[in-house]
Amino acid sequence: MPIYRDKKRGAFVFEFDVRIGGERIRATKHLPKTWNRAQADEFDRKESAALYARAQGLGRDDQAIEDAVNLYLMHRATALKHGRNVAAELALIYPHYKGRPMSALADVCKVIQIKGAGLSPATLKNRISYLRAACRYAWKHHDMGDADPGARVSVPTVRNERHVYITRAEMLMMARACRSRPVRALIRIAYYSGMRLGEIERAQVIDGRFVLTDTKNGDPRIIPIHPRIRCCLGYPRINRASLHFYFSEARAAIKRPDLHFHDLRHSAASEMINQGVDLYTVGAVLGHRSAASTKRYAHLATDRLEEAIRKMGKRA
Image 1: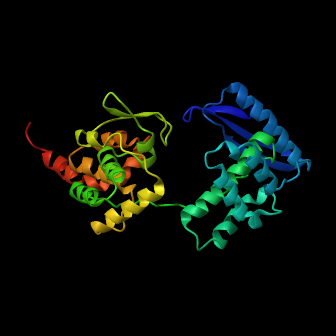
Image 2 (image 1 turned 90 degrees about the horizontal axis):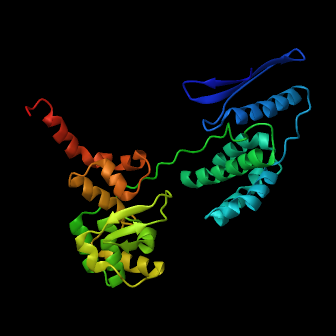
Image 3 (image 1 turned 30 degrees about the horizontal axis):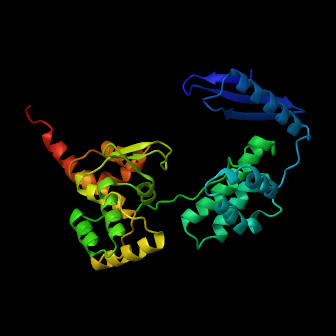
């Protein structure tokens, strides 16, 4: 039977090994762990039929990437927060996939990387990811193609973590140098809470805590309000252009032109770690869903690691 359960993975596996017209056709696919037997059997029927048809020269026509992109933009991308950006990025690489079949997606993505050698890895990664998502959407939801078109696509690796921090003393100097009261409040709140700018703007103050119901990772978050920023609550709203202007002035005053507003969030993590707070708790304050996101601050905890090593062998 082509379908069996892999006990180690806890998921079904589709395995096809048949000789058709003197040719041996083999295929293996690990199915999602959430699938039940009925879903696995349904996949078995469809995939086996497709493999038989392909072996006998009856497979479906290799449909165009641009058709998949049009379906994606029409039915899926509009539901995304960054839908307009997706459409704009896909339009920029249209010449690379124009007239190309979905089976050539991996080759098209390689060309995008080669032709975009002067672009940042993050930009290339986004464009290739959007194109792959469009083709996968068409394959999964509109039955375009016989196999996952994105299976052989490689996406550029991006390492864009910033390691720019300021001390509490520098933060206070910058706040004092800032000529705008709302921006001065935002600087202090960001440093003492670790919240992103958008989170500060959306946060509700309930029972002495910042309450965030809509966060980047989708999980609600509650952050205790530090006593030193209670006086900053209820600050007048300010637009982003004015914020950037006054923040740029303040960072220049302390000779830190490299500083971004978001670096105040990183600085909050740095301050907590320097005060002996463990990485797990730091991640909880910042709202990280996985420990991998907090690992970028691991190098700051070297003093704590040294202290832990020295405790080894000591009498209780």
